[in-house]
Amino acid sequence: MIDRYTIRYFLAVIDHGNFSKAAAQCNVSQPTLSVGIAKLERLLGRKLFQRTSKRVELTVSGAHFAVHARRIEADFAEAERSVADTAAQTTIHLGILSTIPTRWHEMLVKEFQPFIETERVEFVEARERDLLEQLSRGRIDMALTIVRDDNDRFVSRPLFTEGYALAMGLDHSLAQEEVIAAEALADNVMIARRNCEALSETSRHFTSRGVRPFFAAKTNNDDRALAYVRSGLGITVMPMSFACPEIAMPRLAGFALKRTIGILFAAHVDPAQIEATFTYNAMSAAISKLHPE
Image (cartoon, rainbow, N blue to C red):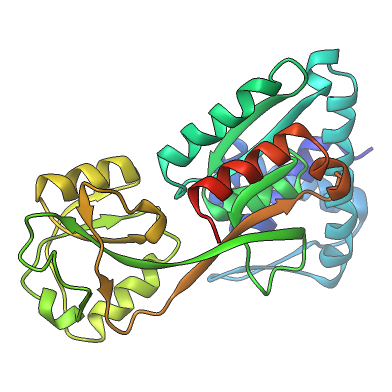
């Protein structure tokens, strides 16, 4: 008999690309995870992974089993929800991208309050990759996150598209400019937003232009990054939805990257049913107020 934990180990290795990260995700040691994978391979009579010194890849058998494993894990999650108490059956598990501004969370909560007697919302904040994993495993019902053209794993509802800009204090010498070239920032101190989905693109943009600034702070917390910016410690690159009266946000010349924010639905839910809920409609109303398009 195949134990659920071995399926979880198997899916974690696929999602993270190596055994050490998968073990951390499952809160077990790497040897424990390896033993679990070996047990699963013995039960199936097939090798599931091809291991090299640089990467872990699925075998043909592993790829076939992965389709069933995801379905089994989603069924487990659905079964757990189905035997929960009545109140929990009306709980909607909503994933939210970690780079969604805090004031958006506040607006969402306010919009949800009138319906709290009939629907409860569990907020799950995470990075894009982790949200996709939780959607795949059926741990959340939908996610307010980035919608990408090449992601056909989930039904999606795009809501709006926005670009990125420089965030700087109002007293910065370039704060009144509309567009600033990267070269003009060569001597500026910067703040690294380590949770930013555009971090690699931003880094390449500056380094390709010979700009290698000093980073006074590196943070996973966008509120703290904004505090550093407001205080004058440094500047950073942020999505335009972070614009507020306390900072200036001129555009970065030649940096055309944009992100589309929308809703992704997990495979275990019917999008039409979710779209009929108070929660979905309240969220749509909040987004319309925050980002009318």
